[in-house]
Image (cartoon, rainbow, N blue to C red; front, side, top):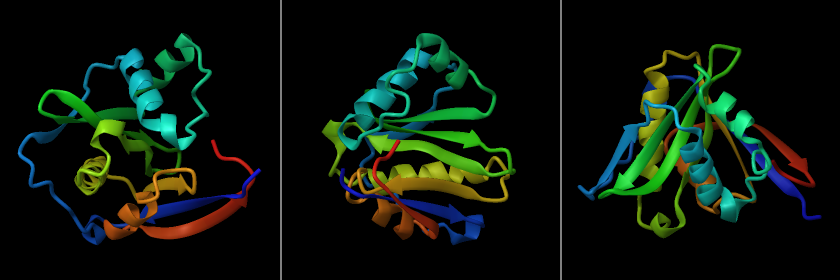
Length: 167
């Protein structure tokens, strides 16, 4: 098996954010305020299909329902016109932080310059939740630009792990 490097990043202050905006006025982001676990599953499978997102692939409907309906989880969806273009999930952790649990673009929207704007929005919304930090992890199986995007928005690496597989 190939070695997979997992990189953990964090931001400790909203002032560290280096925002990027989309110039495309058809691109917008909104919170999915009505939990709909089949929609989250669709986003997870569609966005993560190319990037070895396997940790929830075999979940039952009840596992999805419990996850999505948790009061710790918020889901935001990016759209281009009326088409879903990407999403992210913010999850409160047990240490007063907020994790960007999942983040990505649907395949048809990769390479169109939306990743920086979507991450900017994720970080802004996470900081509105008043955490002590915002964090995320990525790995070498994710999109090749993922780590660079996190760093460009002002996140800092705090841990790197080497392993044989990724979740």
